[in-house]
Image: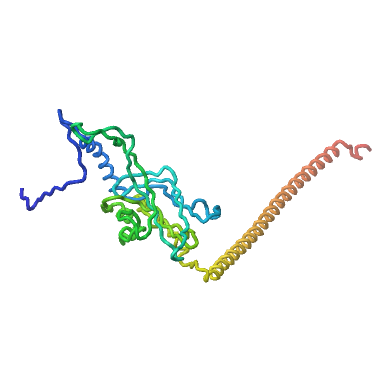
Length: 343
């Protein structure tokens, strides 16, 4: 065979298994590798098919609602949910998490501070047992955990402290799958989106949950934006992108000097809403009048039909009565003798 025409290349993968033989001395690394083999297979499949991102849940809201608090402490509630990190490992938050934002004693600026909320998978040891690091058992035994428990870490980051491996919407991975190519068909766009291969990452993998704009001087949460968080590929490719929760308030300045401008905007919105309500009420009134006219016309029509039917019945009865009277008169005339017969 011509190797230049039919070349062959072999590359290693990240999946390793254990081959057991009779009489083999099984060590810890052998059992760990055998146990890790199916996990690596599933994580490779999850990473290729789902990518990284949120599967369901992980909603971020205020807790409680702003009208329900009397102090200046603001709390953010992270709801339960399931996600997949960029290594292909799923993790699930079973209980809600409450994050407190305390007011800063001496805030440096009145501008909104951007805070990112993210979550990641973590393993911690449980149920320790006495084992020795010395293979000849000559050292002192010490307690080490023999079980690993999956945990979920929820943490807030500033804009300058974002981790390197953060699964979120970026310019390379836009929120709208239609931006990936210039295809006009939504089916082909979703197909191309599903066939994308996610990039590799090393180290701790975080999944973005929300972006928060926090104003230190007022100790208030300006908005919660979830448009930059990433969902897994089936959701990302087939569902519409979420709207930016902070875009609606981005043009509103919160300084005191612009308070009158904000009041004017609110007054204009209220006036527009009042006009819309008045127009709707007038439309409802017209529809009510039209409905009443239709009901009256229907009632008059039914009454006329009833009167016509009653007249038909009366005419039929009169005809029957006249026929009966005529018949009785003829019968009486036959029974009465004529005057010529009497003479």
